[in-house]
Image 1 (cartoon, rainbow, N blue to C red):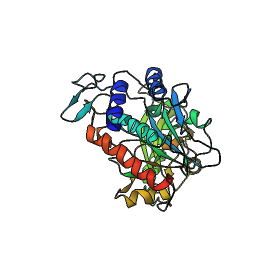
Image 2 (image 1 turned 135 degrees about the vertical axis):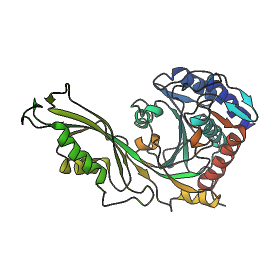
Image 3 (image 1 turned 180 degrees about the vertical axis):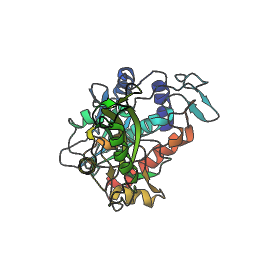
Length: 353
């Protein structure tokens, strides 16, 4: 019954385009899903959240969160991305795997515990917007309205394995400043030459500290541009660094290291997307291990980067199918997702006898 309801909800979500910043209709579908089941839902922009029936400020709170926005379908689609077709035990459609399967599985898990009066924790389920673009009107906005969160379970396709760490991201725009001059004479200071020296340092530098889970910080120069014509020494060279950060450093610490070593001016676009990690002895991790789940470190970004609490990332579906043409999720994965989310929480929130 739970699987049937979850699949029906996911089919409804797939049938409505919900690109990042345009999730108003799927937000309404999720709101109505809870209203139909007589659960009071709250809405902030395109974020929907619900509390368990016996929520009380005297208990710590667990957040169950996933997103209902999607990327745009790529050119390789053969199927209609908004036609939720079931074939060979697969549910096809945009967002089915990332992260619709996790979203509806967490929704049904929340409903399983909703009217239990004897939980050791409160539960909040939140379906949030703008995850695919790390937007400011998704979980980051909603988090301001939530009570203190003890820890969070973030629903993403992980094959129901536990991501105990996740890399953060900094995109840094750099500007090497020189002095223009005629290329035929010994004039000017070539900004490209300054940029080359900085890029050599970026490629060769190894951060002294390395994360136990995520390994070294990785810096990659991905964009470069300079010059306007062949006979003028350029006075500016712009380049961009993609930095995948780890829990060995805060994003702020990494920027200070760059400032101390680069001649170019640097301007980080944002420091919001922080790396995350959780102790392997945390109760939620130990509960997962007792159920035979494996732990790993995730190279991909999620809403974990915007949370101010400890969290794990886990959900049905396979990460490698995210953002692919003719996206799908196995119905069995949704069924197992609900089953193992419930088993995981049983070990944490039910009173011990």
